[in-house]
View 1 (cartoon, rainbow, N blue to C red):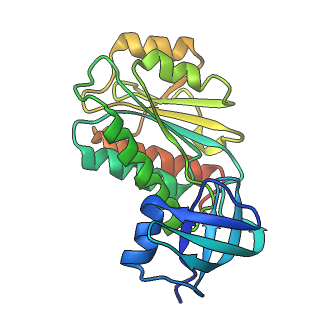
View 2 (view 1 turned 30 degrees about the vertical axis):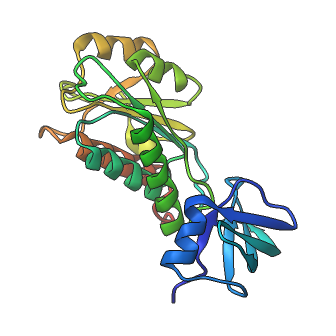
View 3 (view 1 turned 180 degrees about the vertical axis):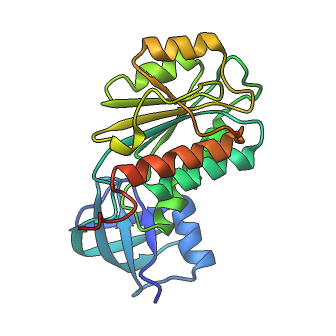
Amino acid sequence: MAGLKRFFVDEIGATATLSGEEFEHAKNVLRLGVGDEIVLLDNSGKEYTGVIATQEKRFMTVNIIGEKQGDKEPKTKVALAFGYLKNADKNEFIVQKAVELGVSELIAFSSEYSSAFMNENKLERLNKVSKEASKQCMRSVAPTVVYVKTFKDALERLENYQNKLFACEFALRSQANISALSGSTALVVGSEGGFTREEENLANEKGFSSVTLGKRILRAETAALALTSVVMFSLGELGEEVK
């Protein structure tokens, strides 16, 4: 049975205001109105149950009647940095699936072989996809998608993770045992053109272990999904261990 509809808002107290795109979706798509019960999220990890008290032309006021800690957030922090792709749908696919799998941090970057360009509208769209994916899979937090202009900047944003994995198509064998992972983990996958040897060397210098995803060359979006899935399984985020 479908649960209560979920919406992100900026601030939640005794009441909250639903406005902007979330308001338009509630009013015009879902046909919600005064008296309907909904769930509000503020990216704190909590979930707030509320009842729509008033409906104006551009916003709704919601009375909060309960709160609880969300139980769908990952126990282990995982970041995914991915080379920004030419095809907008593929970037959205990566963000959507990474959020569903439990990634907590998403970084899009440009590298030596990248041939796509980010702009404010594209980044806004990726963050909207993150919110929609979070609501769909019942998460309480929508990871923010950020963009950095250089590969080096992406690596430096991930320096505090315990494990750092660099998916490299020309690696002959993995430098890390993915099946034995424990603790926060950063993942890096490339764009359509892959990486240069110099970029692999830079990643290694920054503490990243090169890993292979097999002898077949995967599409960039497939590599992102495959590596994230394997790592999440290894960390225990995709099912309980059999005792």
